[in-house]
Length: 224
Image (tube, rainbow, N blue to C red):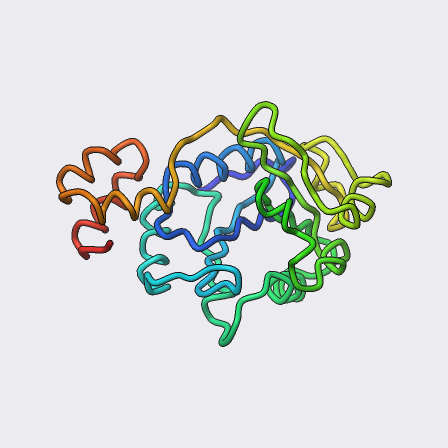
């Protein structure tokens, strides 16, 4: 039976296309769970996000995610966006999750530097603070804090910013930062390697980037 520390509160939401999921993603997830003291972390798979073009079918990416977290007791695959028809917007997912878990459970959206920089372009970003808190993942020691001025005023000008372990003190409206060791894995680069190199050589080159179970699934299904 899984034992969960009673001090851990809330659900982390880590969104992406995960095409494919790699060890860099798992590193972020593990550090988020510990630094933010979360009860669990959901990989929220985006089947066809409006800002990206993705060709690998969602069901295959779901399979890869499930293989990657097979032995991670506090992680799960969230199919909220996969089950939704039409374009994928994060705000719709947050509203659905808030309705599902109720008003008191902390929800924490995990964001990288690129997402934070472009946050002002996201649909209804102003409404996020009434639904979730935000945890900014800095993959480099001195990664610059770049964001739109309206976002800065909304999230960083008041008393919203807290230490990582305090993000679960409220159900929404807080912001924090946590650090993750640099990892060179990239989904784009992984796909490029498979296109450019013989498969055996590609798997050998990527052995430190891909979880073993994911690599085996890619080989078996002849993905990429």
